[in-house]
Image (cartoon, rainbow, N blue to C red; front, side, top):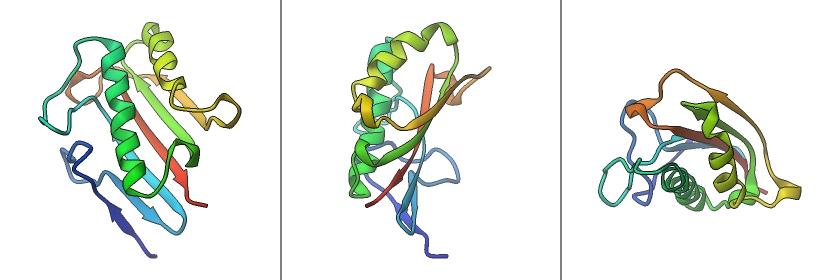
Length: 128
């Protein structure tokens, strides 16, 4: 298997034994991103909209490093700490995709997330 590690300083460095993304063949698997500001290394969870936007911007930076955009994303997984926040998260998330070509996804509420954030999103992309 040919496995290429995708790494950028424009997204947070991993906080454990994993990589930001792994490319194999024409597929890119992006690890779950949380609202860590890559410039400061600090968590930014002041409000849900800002937190969700930073998560999406971190995904965008990793996609760019893999020569992809959100148009290449075929699947996302959204993990949230409170399903009551779904509407706000979904609103921000939706601005990053065209409705007609949006990826498949699931959204699940979990008991806890790393660093007790409100949202974590991972993605799978295919390079044309």
